[in-house]
Amino acid sequence: MGSAMPNAFDESNIYTRLRDKAEAQLQAGTTPPAGHWSMGVDALRLLHQLSSDPDKAHDALKLLHELQVHQVELDLQNEEIVANEQALAEDLQLYRGLFDGAPLAYFVVDLAGVVIQGNLAAAELFGVGVDHLEGQRIDSLLQPQHRPRLLGLLERVAARGASGSCVAETGEGEACRQLQFLAAAAPARGQLLLACCERDHPESI
Image 1 (tube, rainbow, N blue to C red):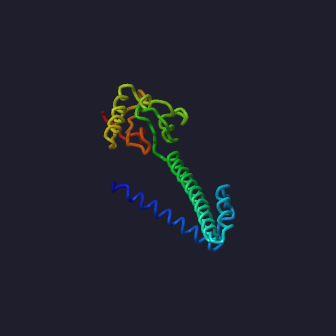
Image 2 (cartoon, rainbow, N blue to C red; image 1 turned 60 degrees about the vertical axis):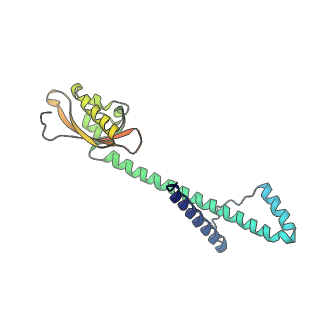
Image 3 (tube, rainbow, N blue to C red; image 1 turned 90 degrees about the vertical axis):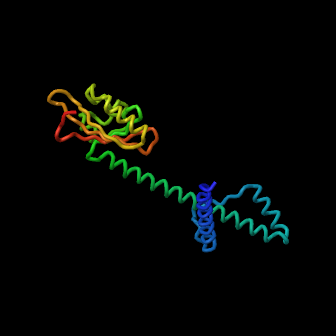
């Protein structure tokens, strides 16, 4: 029960802030010109009935004011939603650019090791196109005897939530290379993030 109190408090603060801002704009006459002032038939009928009775005219004005304040609150909420969506889109574009242009090879894989996304450095590391990576099992890029090592790493990270690393080989003969993999849980549930780079000094593994 205690954990719900901060949320209720925050929501109350947000409502109070919006209402105060709406009241201030109405008093100053600075409400957004794009606001759509519309009332339902029932509300108009009620206002007409109240305003027809001198004793209830004050109630009619009070109701009209409340409706106006509520409309301005909705307009302000819509403005904030649009602004938040734009900010999120800009953040997404920024981080997508960082991922795609990173000098280190990055993969996003599911728990079975299927590549969801790879960046340009990852495609260049394995000599394939970026589109070729998506949908392919990450272990298929390695020598068969080293595939269980990488899959085991993914299983451990998925089970424990902690990052881990391993070394595996790709290519054959003179083209054989040792790769260092670092795995960690991705922000999205059911996904893992893999970083990969070639080892400068291959060792016996």
